[in-house]
Length: 72
Image (cartoon, rainbow, N blue to C red; front, side, top):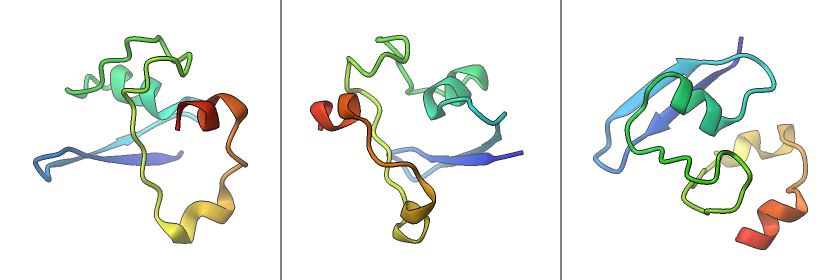
C-alpha cells in the first residue's frame, strides 16, 4: 500500500497510507489533514495544491498531464 508524507509549512509532517489510484488530495482529505482545501474537488482548477517530489522519485512518475502543466 503506498504511503504519502505531507509536510506542513510549520515543518510538521503527517504520513498516511493510501490505496493505489487515489490522488494526494483525496488521500489528504480522506485522512482529515488540515490545510488541504480541495476547493476544485480534484479537477486541477484551483491551484491550491502544491507537491514537491524528491528528484530520486521523478523517474517513477508519469509525465506531467496537460492540465497540470497549464496550472504551473
